[in-house]
Length: 504
Image 1: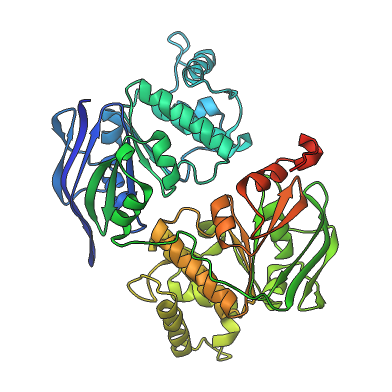
Image 2: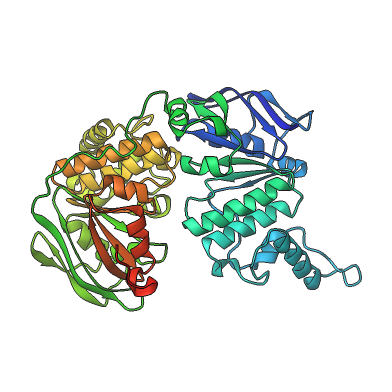
């Protein structure tokens, strides 16, 4: 298999920190090459250099044997290097075909106007090539996440890409959508396109990957053939140590009931939801995408309205129609969209941590900056938030450290009930372990955690009890001991109601 790309001795620094240290990367024609590393290892910086977003400080890039200068994104695109980022680069109210050919629209030679017919035909041919069942005239805003991703892939291939870079492509997809994506990736690969694939989901690698380059602390520590490498070996190279149990659940003894939800209903979204949470336990919530898991929690926290139902905190009924009331009741919500809803990215760490609790540092006429400094420093130290200081902007932190800032925010607000929605999505293995240890610490101190996750091994590994949600209803409860992936998926897809009764 011939080499299409070589990146040699790549270095990149930002003020005060060297991000890449003599990184080498070789990509072969038609291979899926995994780029693996903890958050902050340098993966994104390397990819942005290849994409023309950042300029390298030193080193060289060779494409198809020739040394090339990639100073801006257009240079990369001219070579056939296209990147699909985790946050899609699509215009919501344009159609799929308009997004794909934006800036390259076919023009009628006679009228010199947009040739709508050819635009549709070109898009249909592209979709047929990928076996995609998407209407070229559908507006992007009306498409699901998986369909939007396919539009991004089609857009990249419409310019005859030779290298496709995919950044966390499965982070928001269901198992079925991931299966479809892998089928598309294999088809693209068979057509000679090389793929650089960035993901933290190690279980995916053996399904689609050929080789993996592992980065740590700004260096490429090794490149391995995936078929000859175990997941444990990849993790060891990535974190520089033995990680041990991937789900380090500590034994717990649940105490008093701290939350009870009774007959909670929101028309056409969820109905008659009943459950309880005890101090010192992790309550897992499972269900397929769209089952209503997040919607239930958003209503409990007062973000979305509810039509009926009651919420009790420590035996006392509370009225929650706004997040402020939930915070006052001792509930914290780690939203699945931490960058959009959990943090103010342009604010520093200190302001993000203290934002819901300004009363605690209020001097009537101004904020007590010394008290803020003391409190924030304590959380940075106790939660081991990796940062240059309290003044570092939240947007510059790795995903795992952003999640720690959100946890610190709710700890400062004196939350006793933590709703954690996809708390480890998009963060690396090492950071996941740290989040799990934080969960253990919280329940050991008497907090209660509601864990919503699409990662079934995570739910099974960290929960004391598990509830299964299907079509807006809680359809099954399992103890930690009796729960299995098969049982959960059976009930998440309808159970006896849709599959017919079974004997086991």
